[in-house]
Length: 139
Length: 139
Image (cartoon, rainbow over all chains, first blue to last red; front, side):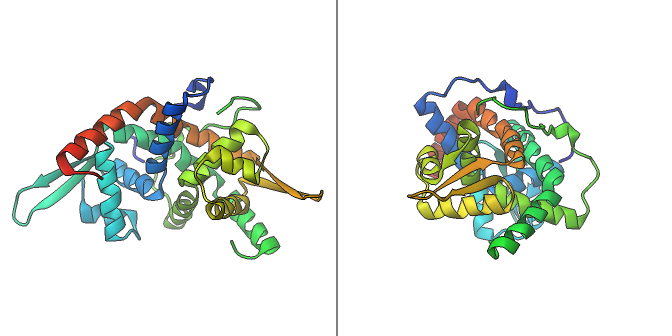
């Protein structure tokens, strides 16, 4: 992700309050994780974080092999959750722009640790997959 | 997540090298993200991070509403990727323990920023969902 614009607040694991969450809050947080911890959400966050504002079709091209249906569904969920702004331009032909909200930018910052982790560990993961396949057959 | 044991290396978004990745590495990293950016992987990482070593059925109970099939599939992928150790105890009846590898612990640390984000923003997300539903009907 590019590093332009104001730095989002970064949540560091040592900020975590050590007491257990109350069960209702724990359920809410798990529900949110269930919606946002999704590869398409992460890839769209990265595309919008790198490029600023994009049209629907541009997001599809940037993300890669996502289906139209999954892109529509994921963007709608992200809009509902307050992660993206959706702006319809009433021109001819009409077009629709998407950009990250402030909250979406902060989630992009939180996920950035996972991207860095994947970049740092890809060789180790590939070696592990090969060794596992040799022991067990393909995953 | 509990904070016992040595602190995993934390990847901060400002560590990210600003040059674009080469396309092959970018593909590899996207593939890894596609496997690990998954709510079940995140919930299992959290369960093992909080509890240390767990049996298969204990992971299921801790995670909540995961099916046996999805739990088996996710743990197998995590074992192949080198995120969990799987130990079969040849006792009667036999049982199987799972624990995080060092690399799995470091991914848990990277995801911790996303948990903290969800905890910090749950009220804002709920408010956004309600406003969206009022404008558009249910997601």
